[in-house]
Length: 193
Ligand code: ADP
Image (cartoon, rainbow, N blue to C red; front, top):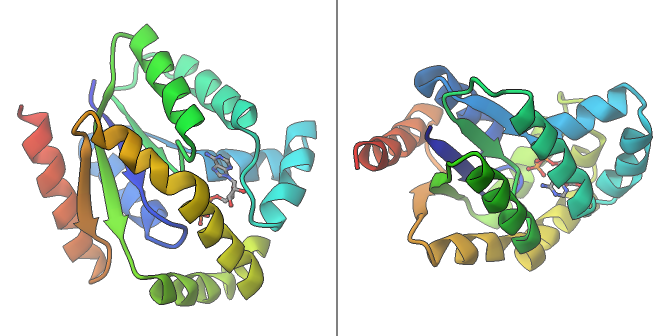
């Protein structure tokens, strides 16, 4: 199994690159944002609780996302590997993920950190908000709140995995293809180790 964390701020292109990566490497895509939006559209109690938090640009509680990831791991016993997108977003989530993976005798192979400047992020997200139907992409104040949550709570996830030498920084500006080839070359290096 080879498991990847695609890491980076909101708007850094994790969703776009994930689609290409799972097709190339045959991984199972686990996006906590997508899992939460599916709970919201099904109007489950979890979705109703998460929606108001997401609409403020804040992080939903660790137990909620860890629970979702744990069941997704259980329901995909045949996976060749997982691509985590938007997860883990806190150190507590990282520690829980490492425990869940070690119970399956596997681990994170690499953390790919997409690097994109803040003003570029805001303009990409406002642009996405014109068509995505995502309420958290339409207001600049909510977008800025998400970037602040990222700086305060999520950048430390990269520090956590750096201790294990697992983090690689990849430029997240350029064409989709250029960024994708930067990601692939890092994965190929680590997979062949
Ligand atoms: P983006 O990367 O553009 O912010 P996501 O789809 O990953 O979009 O997440 C949207 C929202 O869902 C976040 O702002 C947050 O409220 C919630 N969320 C997603 N993943 C997590 C997570 N791992 N921990 C806590 N909250 C999360």
